[in-house]
Image (tube, rainbow, N blue to C red; front, side):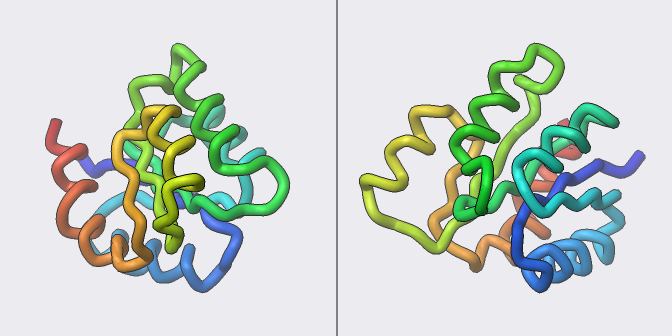
Length: 123
């Protein structure tokens, strides 16, 4: 059985890059381009893990994470918050929302395609 990964980013090239890397590793990839679409996709089918961009227009990443973690049907889903930001004022609210992983680097692509996603999928 393959793991289902929800990739959420407002930049198409980032979504396509993650989708390509994860598909090669035989993951089922579902994509969303904003927070509302992410929550709607989670309502259609709960993924095994969410890779969530931290800088999105509209509903911000903190609200998306809060809603995922406050919903009993999705609270168990690991959320990897991916960002190029590394400043404490921005990173601190993300930790308070208790994402599974907060990764202050876009280089997470390689690490997630070989590290965290297979680990969560094997649980």
